[in-house]
Image 1 (cartoon, rainbow, N blue to C red):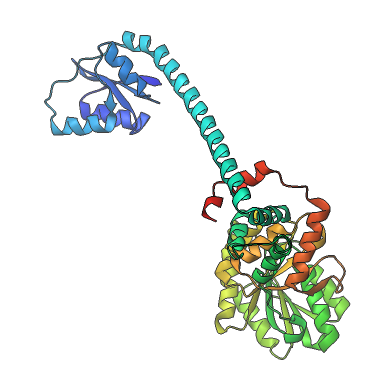
Image 2: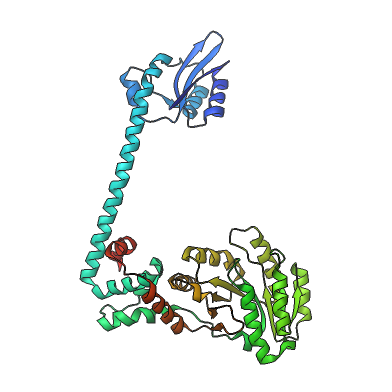
Length: 411
């Protein structure tokens, strides 16, 4: 607790000084009229133990500065409370500080007890589920080993039948994942059109554009394919795309705003496939709104298909943040890259299922155009299971209880 003495010409001025220096949470310990004005003793970081200690020593009850000011306005002529001499305040200071420390220790102990109680309740609930529904508990455990997020796993097991056999518990989780993973079935090289690839930096947008362009060139020839770069933030971004363009024999155009992008697309109306490589922008980057506004203006006539690129080796929370950041663009699809670098595919599968994002294709290497393929839900889920069996250790009961224990009662 910090105590300070204020002197002013009148009570109103004194209260203004208290609020200005100590804030609205300051507590008035005493007031006293002097020959030349008003004296106020006020404190901050006040603990309620002060009330009990002050009362025991015969001192007046402290009150918040705000309420004291209001009372002063209502009855300015009311006699002030008996003052507490500063010497008594000095005597109370060690007692108050000791009580504050004891209260802090008590809060810490209560927090530890609460955490322990929650763990015990979680373990009891999980153990009860294992006894009552052992096959369903097995499914949850398998999904956890796959890296599936808790909310998605709970959502999926609600689709399970009440009675499960051992064989069903073994294979149904993979089937549920496959069934809930949306796949667009779209082959960009075949259907063509104008597609903009968006997403955070480092996910492989430019390389993916090159792979898609190479496949389109193989089917329709270089004259029917064009590339557009709107990445004027990253040094060398346009040069990298131009390098791919020269290798493929494809023209590369640059656009820096909505007007130049609209003009470029108007000039490319006769092309079968037009791919737009945008700047990599994180969800918390202020430039993201500017980039999205450019794409929204260009897409007024519905001429643009926006596809979010996600890297499978990113953490689930980062993937989810990226999806939420780009959702205002009304994403039509998603491309998952870097499957070969991901220690687990559970995070990206969870995000795709949670947001119901259709998957166009996946990539798993740097080779152009070999390392790209159309999305297949069953193939992707089986790959996730293979990665899990190779790298993921078993999940113990403590982790299962922490993740699902307090929620299994509703299942």
